[in-house]
Amino acid sequence: MCQNSEPHILIHPRKGKRERLLPENGLLLVNPSEASSCHRRLQNDSGESRFLFNSQLTVARNANYFLAGPAIGAPMAVLCMEKCIALGAKKIILYGWCGAINPDLRIGDVVLPTMASSGEGTSRYYPLAVPAAPSGALRSHLAGIYAEHGVNVHSGSVWSTDAIYREDQRLLQELQERDGVIAVDMEYSALCSVACFRKIEFAAVLVVSDELWGASWRPGFSQERFLEQKERALSILLGHCESSMIEL
Image (cartoon, rainbow, N blue to C red; front, side):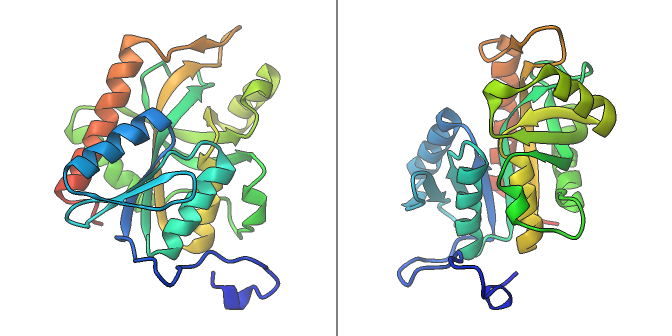
């Protein structure tokens, strides 16, 4: 979608005169602690730090991929994605956490989402002819990478919300039973919508941090399995990026 086809839109994402293009491939991290450690990892390996609003942006030493984040919530995540696309990104992988609403999911499980269901307010500004979904080829490639490392991954629709303190048990149960939604996050549906609208490849890796399918909320942020699984899932993803980046 180019700005010439939407003359009524006032502000378009663009490359500034002094800004340099990014590699086509990149990772977008949601959480500040993980983003900070990954940026340090790239910068300690001679990666180049660049400006990205209130977030961070680092280009790997060999310029085969970039790392962006943190980006919590749909508006901030979309702001980062739009800028990265304007600077040349064509393939972006989201890494974050999610809450399980399907009883088959447990804390520490790895989810590669399929369809996106929006409970946030950003997606509706990116009209699509078909429901938002990730790149099937990129998602399948990620599944293959994790399978090679012996990591079992789960599939299903993810619902994104802007209001984590207003998650209604009745609504979550309805989403699970009616729409087959298996997990909840804050960014996935908006990023899916933008990726489809801008015609880039996008997929996500989410680790279950808490369970929402029982009678009460069960957080797992400090549980050993969650801590181990999130580090392992991210390490596998970074290792693949550093060795070859994902080629389709």
